[in-house]
Image (cartoon, rainbow, N blue to C red; front, side):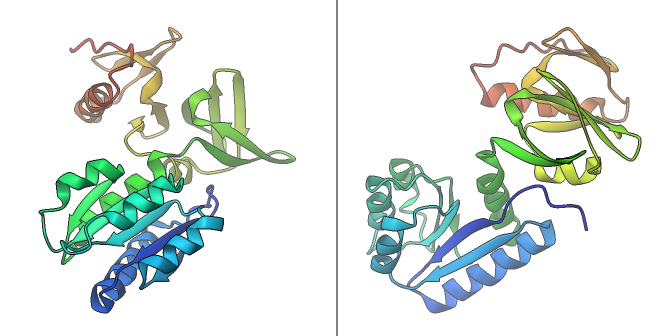
Length: 248
């Protein structure tokens, strides 16, 4: 089992339909256990109870909220009005409410009965999209590393060496464990021993990429197509990025 680099997260499941609530909880628990994520689940069968809890304890990273056409998205709107800024995944047996998801800034709108792969994608997106830093074991203790300063990671001796905007840092953690804890859409293996933050990529050519610092890194020929596709998706979803792809 990879070493855990992230603190446990709190997920609330709220659904007035017992069968749906139990299914959502069981599926979410199984998915995140298989992914190695440490999560604590809180289950509610009444919207009012969840609202009361969130008054003083609005630190859920994710809310799996069952909604119906009769109830609408009122609970989600109430939580947003009261300052809840965690991720909300709306679950419904009807597609009619999907457009309202934008009004409450829902991360995803999933139809019941839930499909495992769709719920998996939604959970991983919610748990990692807002990640800003990671806690790494280093010599003499632990160190918080902001993703905004982490350019790339490479295997080094029995651990990893991280190249930061402020210098270098070494850790005993395995690169596979580190990769599992980082946002998948932002970090990509360009080589089996080299993990790169796409936010720092300036250009991509055949068998190499250039960082915005000017540093050139090798790209495995077996990963070239995947790296190019991942970089293109990253740039499309981050219009403010100044990176430019130079296609081979």
